[in-house]
Structures are given as structure tokens and as C-alpha cells.
Length: 389
Image 1 (cartoon, helix red, strand yellow):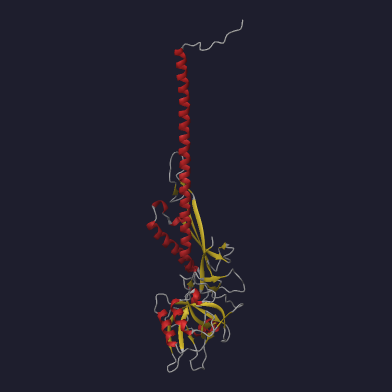
Image 2 (image 1 turned 45 degrees about the vertical axis):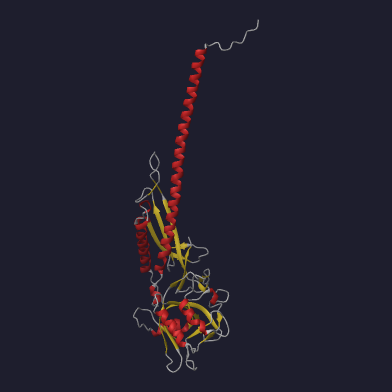
């Protein structure tokens, strides 16, 4: 006789009790699992929020190190060079560091407390970058680059505190950035834009007059230790000797003298140039431009324009440099920057332009530069600011 399968032998009451216990155990397991997932989710959310906070904090630190380097690098320009003396950048390095900390303090006035930068959070290192296309920063003179490092260490003073702290997590993290700005001095030309004119006066100066005669004459009427030069054109009637010339930056022939006064005051715009670019002009590859070393019959207009520049808030202008004797076209081999002190028509009954200038520095975004090249000399007076790291 086959055994019969017995089902539901327990009383209904006992079966109901077992089901409740099973459901309770399942409910307890689910609750524990849900709590565990909630704890994990909260922990992951804390990590994500702290990570996002640190990323934003790092970006803010990077932006500030970039700005501190850019606004302070000009302090490395050596005033001794403007006085035709041997370079000495020890004081310039100190001034650059002071400028960094001055802007740091200004930034702290507007930054949140969590973004406050203490003096101990900043390291300033002067150095040199020889090629902006392959920037390698080295700590050596002559200085043309400034490295600004910002560092807030978790174990140091003024740490970068996390957004969410506690629960066994660290209270702070290490956040460091570094930026290198350099003064690119291999200037070969200028490319103005419709919104940014190049402050170039359409006047060329003899290289021997600027680099030799000016230094030998040692004229310093305003006693600022910068030797001046009187740039002279020949009288309208002819004769005499000139050490300068007016030039046609648009290369048009004949030379359009009527445009020069406006160019002197307002600078050079793309429409003033052939192709929108002035240059390249180097000793090894001169730029030929139409020119005249004779004062025009509109000399008074040139004098008025130059004196307007001299009396303005920024009397600095860029001038072309030519080597050798005057020729037409004139062989432009480079550029210098100078402050316009005054201009005068010294011809009396004749027309003759004289303009007095002295060395100055100009850092300008429209300057066209080349990679470090032994055939292109560094420019003492004109630079382009670059953030290279």
C-alpha cells in the first residue's frame, strides 16, 4: 500500500503564526538592507559633495594663482635697463613678490572666509622661460618669468576645509596650484585688432641715434635717470641731417602724410596696415616701408599730435628702428618703446620737426613674437604677457 502525501497537517492557527514570523523576518531583513543602503548613499553623497567642493576650490585657487602671476610679472622689468645701466633684478624680484601679496590682500577683502589666502599659503619664485612654445621654468637670471604657487595643506595653517566634515571623515584636504607668467621679449611686429589699437607712432628712429648717440649725450632734462633723444627730421627746404623719418605703415606709395597725426594719437588699427600685420621686422629680415626724412608742410599737425600724446594719461608710444643711412623705402629692423616728452617745429621760417623721447617699457597684447631664436635679439623695451603654465 502506497504512503499518501499528507498536506497541511498543522492547524490553521499555527500556519498563520508561522507566516507572520516569516513576514516579520523578511521585513526586518529589508529594513536592515534599506538602512544599510541609506548609510552607503549618504556616505557616497558626502564623498561626491566633498569632491565637487574640492574641484571647485581647486579651480578657484588656480584662477587666483593665474591672476596673481599675470598682474605681478611686470614688476620684473628692470629699471636699470631704462637708465642704460647693468641689469640688477634683485629689487625687481622683491617688488614682484610684494605685488603678489598686495593683490592677495585685495582678493581676501572680497573672497569668502573659506577661500581666504594667508601669506603662508603663497610662494613666489622669479625665474626664466627661454621658449614660450616649450616653456621650461628655471630659477636663473635674467628673470623674465614669475611662478606663483598657492598651497593649503590639511595639516598646515589655514587648511582647505571640506564642505561636509565629521562622521569619521577628514576635516580638510591638500589643495595646491602653480602658475607661470612670462614676459615674451622676442618682438618682431604687431597685429592690432578692431578693439585694440597698437600704440605705434608712424615715426622711425635711427638705431645708431637711439643706442649710441643717446647714451653718449646723456641728456636728462627731467632728472629721472633716463637719457633722452631729440629725433629730428630735415627741414622742408632740404639740407641738414636727420636721425628720424616718418613712415607709411600701410606701405602705400606715395607716402600719405595726412594719416600720420591721427595714427600718432589713436594708434595703429588693422585698416591702417597692409594685411593687418606690421612686420616681421628683424635685423636679419628688414621690413621695407615708404618713408621721408624731410619735414612735411604739415609739420604743425605732427607737432600737435605728438604734444597731445605727451600731455595724455599714457604718453608711451612704440617707434620703429632703422639701421644704416636713410633710404626710401626705409629698412625697419625692429621696434623700441619711448615716452613722448615734447615736440616742436624748430624750423622757424621753415618746417622742421623735433620730438624728444626717452626709454620706457610697454607690455602690449598686440605684439607679435617668435620663439627664442639667436638671430632675433631680445627686446629690452617691448614685451607680450603670456601665461605658459
